[in-house]
Length: 158
Image (cartoon, rainbow, N blue to C red; front, side, top):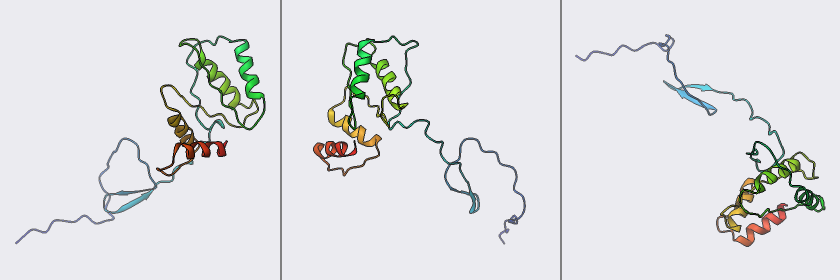
């Protein structure tokens, strides 16, 4: 005759269990179909209005670029709905730090823009840059979209 296994009553306390790490999701099933609802706080509010997060400056000190800075600000303030600015110079001349500074000024509303979109274009094709801009803006196109479709959507968005 087989021995019946003793079954613990459902209302009896289980021995303590310790679990490390993070738990996420809205419903988590534990053990014998016990469901625990986890109410998570809402995501933290964005601390800025930039569409693309602007990375922090890397240099300990910023060297002002005089007329170049002022020309860049003037070009951005010139008017219109949107502006695209590219910086080109030999490596190590401060292009990225200048871009950080100007992008943050735009993000803070000092240049008359509501948003700033940060894109790194190093070693990327124009199409890759356009797709990244679409992705950051939350625009999804069909996989068969052509480059013309992508550029038209960017023009429409901005």
